[in-house]
Every structure is written in structure tokens, then in C-alpha cells.
Amino acid sequence: MACPSGTAPLSLRPIAAALAASLTLAPLEALATQTVSNCNDSGGGSLRAALGAAADGELIDATGLVCGTISLSTGVLIVANDAQKIDGPGADKLTIDAAGNTDGGPVFFHNGSKTLEIDHVTVSHGHKYNNDNAHNVGGGCISSQGNVTLTQTVVSDCTMTAGANTHAKGGAIFALGDVTLTESRVTGNSTHGASPFGYEMHTYGGGIFSNGTITLDHSTVSGNHAYIGGGIYSDFATSVDSSTISGNTADQGGAIDCRCALQISYSTISNNHARTAGAIELQQSNTAAASPMFIRNSTISGNTISGGIFSPGVDSGVPITISNSTIAFNVAGAGNAEGALYSYAATLTLQSTIVSDNYPFDVDVQGGTTAISGAKNLVPNPSPAAVAALPFGTQNACPLLQPLAWNGGPTQTLALRSSSPAIGAGNNLIPLFFDQRGSGFPRVHGINPDVGAFEWQGNLVDDSIFRGTFEPGLCHL
Image 1 (cartoon, helix red, strand yellow):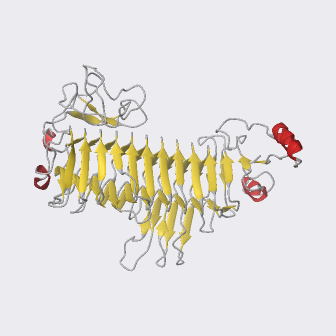
Image 2 (cartoon, rainbow, N blue to C red; image 1 turned 30 degrees about the horizontal axis):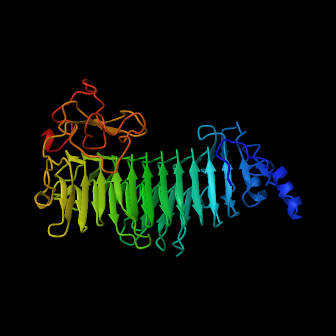
Image 3 (tube, rainbow, N blue to C red; image 1 turned 135 degrees about the horizontal axis):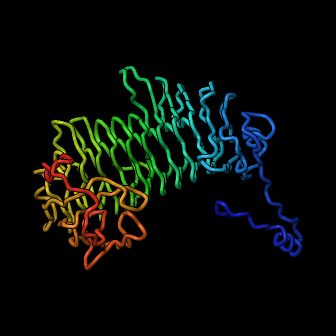
């Protein structure tokens, strides 16, 4: 059993010896630790040497390094073991930088079938190139044939480039298995491709591409680019908790392009851009087992599209339940006729959710196809197709939202003014203990919960001055 990060492993030898004596077996020996003692590219004490010497499952310990940067110049770091853990002194204290490599490889290539775990370091400037017809490769900085787990790690400024014969997948991270991020950042990465049409088709997941499950916990995916899925591309399952996905760009699916089972909680998806589907494009998974898809206690704001079709916020072709969330200030280009939340699936469920201040519409559905259910929502400006489909009792008042800001908790939120009609008008059917901000911000303040991701806590002085035209949308014209 793995030890929690930052704790010393328990000695198993006395127990193992006693057990062995009783069973006439040899004592169990603990795995050794490979220590990295310098920031050289290669040679004794280097990270490269430690990787070459490590047995399967051994820890590579770089926590004692004070040299700052391991500058690679002799090629990719090969991780041949099935399971490997690398632990550094902190992402602000050690960078593994591949800017000097010229082999067209990532920073790390993991050829094992289990998990490559990288903790407490920054990994940067990998620049992988591929032009053969092998689709199960990718990853500008980290490429794995198994799983990738990162804790308090930064992956930045990586590129995955494909020639005309193949696809580019995962500007920063590619895994055939699962990708798990905890308190980590994937930022400033990109995928690039070539095609006879002169644009970058067949590039997926500017930050992360996975054929397995993608899990984000208190993490950030920002400033990445791909043709499809600027931040994340997933075709199996994706879970986003207490995280931020922002400032990513794509042709479609600015933040997430998901042919997957998607679950988002306590998170903010903001300021992403695409030609179509500015924040989230959600389609049916061909591989994931059926599971409930939901967005709860989350904010989707400031996302944009420049094309004439699809939604600037959430574009869903599968049934999804959106609860206690706020979708606001998402903007489509001129001539677009779809709302910030658009569904062409059979069903869309809205519970205690604000969809407001979006352009040109707040909620839109494919007429005659999508049935909307739920209660206690606030939607001032539905499209003509959605008017008849919205649940009875949906409010159409302006929610008086303040700008996206740090109002407490791990993510930015849209606070309610003290006079907002959303206060005390919602429900909490899940039930949730806290609003999007987490501990210290009860989901219910007073008798009834508020509509949306933010729960007003009784303050009578608003944090900012409400200005009538600070964002486009029906409430602020």
C-alpha cells in the first residue's frame, strides 16, 4: 500500500520476519530508493541515471535538490518500469526542462502499463514530433502507455506536433490509461498538425488527452490550444472537482471536448474561446459505461465563440443534469442563433440554476427533440424554441450578478447582490453541504437556498458596484 505524500514508509521488516518465521518463508525486503543528487543531464546522481537503475515501483527521490533546473540536452527521459514515482522538492524549486533537446521527444516517455507518478516538480518545454501512422502516441511533455498521476506539479510550455500522416494528441500530457491531477496546473501547452487543407485538423487536447478517465482535483488547466478540445479531450470519462479550466482555445470545445461521461462539481469554466462550442462540447461516449452526467455547484462564464453555430457555453448532445450552477456572460458571435446552454439531446434537467446575461440567448433547445425538466431556475432570456420547454415556474427576473471574482474558496464565482431575486428562491435536492466555494460557505443560508452556484451569506454591503452595462446580455443592456 502506498504511503500518503510527505509521510515516511512504515518499516515492514519486523512484521514480515515474524510472519515469514511462522510460515517458513523468506523475510520480505522493502524496495530501495533511487536518490537524485545533482541537476546534471546524465551521469552518476542524475535523474536519468536514477530512472535507468530503478526497479519497478521504486521511488526516485529528488526532494533534496537545491539546484533549481535539470536542463535536458541528450534526449527524452525513458521510464521503462510499469510503475514509477518521481518526487521533487516543489514545483517552484525544481524544473525539468527539455528546451535543449533536439530528438523530437517529450520530457518523459513511460513505456509501462501501470502508473507514472510525478510529484512536486515543474515539467516544461517538451516538443514532441510524430509523423507515422501510430495514433496511440502523443504528449508534448509526458507520454504514457499506462496512467499518469500528478500531485502539486506544473506542466507548461509543451508542444505536440504531428505531420500529415498522423494526429497530435495531448499538448502537455497523453495517456492510454487514466490521467489524475491533484493540486496541479497544466498551462500554456499546444498541439499542432498538418493537413492538405492548410489548417490544423486532427489535433486533440491542447492540455490533456486520455483514452481512460481524466480526474482533476483542485487543479487548473489554462491557456492551452488544440483544434478539438483546447484544454481537455476525453473519449471515456472526465471528473472535474474544485478546479478551474480557463483561457483555452480551440476550433471546437474551447475548454473540454468530451465524447465521455462528464461530471463537474465546485468548479469554474471561464474565458475559453472556440469557433464552435466555446466552453464544453459534450457528445455520447463510444467507450464509457453509462453513468449520470452532471454539472453541479459550478460556474460557466465569459466563454465565447466566433462561428455561427453551437453554443458559447455548454453544447450537449447527451442528457445532462445541471444543478445549483450559474451559466452567465457567455457570448456568441454575430449571426449566432443558439443559447449559452444548448441541448439537442432527448432531455435536459435544470435544478436551482441561473442561466442569464448571455448573448444571444440563455437557454436553447432543438425544437421538438429536447424536453426540459426541473424546478427553481432563473432564465430571463430563453430562445423562442426553449420558452415552451422550460419548467413551469421558471423565473425570468434579472439575477443581479456581480463580475467573476475571488469570493472565497479555490475557484472564482459570480456573487449575488444582496437584492438579487435568486436569494432564497432555489432548492437543494442533492443535497449539497456548501456552495461552490466549499467549506465555510453553507449551501443554505436562511430558510431556503439561493438559485445558482453562489449562496449569499447575509452581507448587506455588496463587494462591487453593479453597473448596468458591464457585460452583454438581456439584464445589462
